[in-house]
Amino acid sequence: MSVADENPDTRRAPRRNVADLVPVTDQIAERVVGRLGNLSETGMLMLASVPLREDALYQLQFTLPLADGHAAPIDVGVHLLWADPAHVAGQAWAGFRFITLSREHRELLRGWIGQESPAR
Image (cartoon, rainbow, N blue to C red):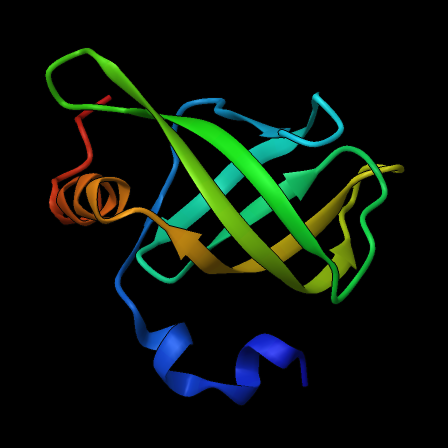
């Protein structure tokens, strides 16, 4: 059982898959560390392209694609709960819990998660 499974309230938060390739930047290391998989108000799934330390804290940034065609940079402080190897060597799926997220960014996420995914 992963740490993410230990808190069912966190796992029940509505989430939305990220259809676009949205890079995630580690603001401390100033480098892209992966791409978004899905988002909720309480956390995110990322496909990591660099090794990450389990149970570590990170300051990450990603750009949220908005319905009006604009994008909003989102800054989050996160706790890495778990990481599992992906099918591609050197990549891993990583589950994060948000520990810091501004009220403005939380509102943007809430609105984005509640939107219908655009038809493709």
